[in-house]
Image 1: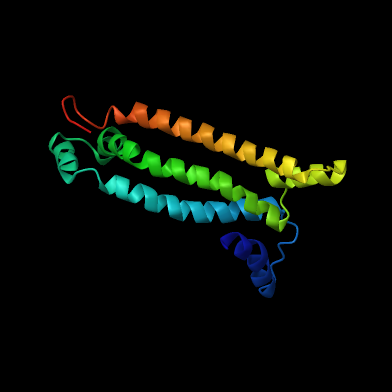
Image 2 (image 1 turned 90 degrees about the vertical axis):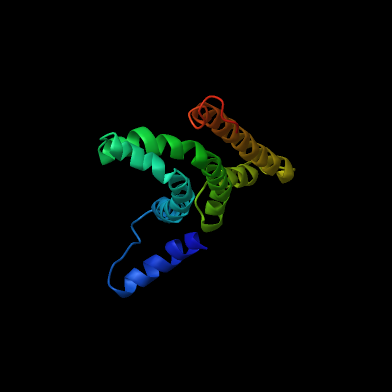
Length: 166
C-alpha cells in the first residue's frame, strides 16, 4: 500500500503544488517508500530490544563513571543486538519477499526478469520460469536465515553469564 501511495500519490500531490517529479526514476520512489516503511517498522523492532536491557545495567555504568557514549557502546547495545536479531532477520526476509511487489508498478526485479525472459523467448512453459524465480527467492531466504542464525549464535554468547541458563 505504501509503495503505491508513494509511487502514484506523491507525484500527483506534489504536482498540485507545482513540483514535477516526472524526471525521477521509479526505483528512487521504491527505495524511498521502502526506507520510510522499514525505517518505522524496524524502529519498533529495535525499541523493545533496547528497553529489555535492565535499568540496573545503566545505573551500574553510571556508578562506574562511564559516559553516556561508553554506556551505550559497551553495555546497552551489545545486550540489545542478540535480542533484536531474530526479529531483524525476519524483516530482512520480508523485504526480500516484498521486493516482488516492485514488479506490479513496473520496476524490473527478479519477477520482472522472469516475465521478460518468457516474453522474449516465447517460453512454452512459463510455470518453469516462475518456479525458478521462486526457487531463487527461496534460496535467498535460506541464506539470509542461516546468516541470521549464525549471527544470533555469535552474539548470544555475550547475552548470558557463565552458569546462567537460557
